[in-house]
Length: 235
Image (cartoon, rainbow, N blue to C red; front, side, top):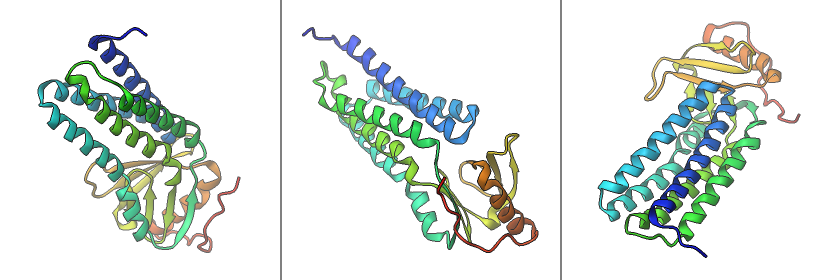
């Protein structure tokens, strides 16, 4: 079996990374039903890839390995805001299941985890490519988190709205909201936020009436919504 030199091997690895990141970006865009969201996700991931590539060339190999391991840990920590928000949500009133996401996020997660396993099993040629197993660990972590995304649905509770990616939006922190033209994308404008004051949530048509009723009642003291009860997620 022919052995690839380090340049060919690096090219193959970068191609696999790009494929995995594009799959994840498409999944993110489909989750939010927004092409802009997919573009932002792709640019963010490709920027991270460029940073990792540069660091791998200029930093000592051991330090680069530590950074890659730290990235894997941070990937798992990305679910921390959701888990904390879940404890503060109060009574769950509406659960909005991720009906489309599993068709994209699960395959994307499997693809990234498979790439990570290939890297961990690789026998790299050259000192710099010795970072591949550590990069593989990070990709496996990212793939698992991406693939299990459907286990973290958007929920509306007595204390706010639990966002799959951003954690809990307290009712007092929501300044206003608006719907997309097709009525399936809810945009929340927040008074305060560490990262972005706008949140985008995918809301299927059958949930829009109930979600709008709770938002109007909580934000503008409109007519009280129907009796608080968890809406069935069955199709």
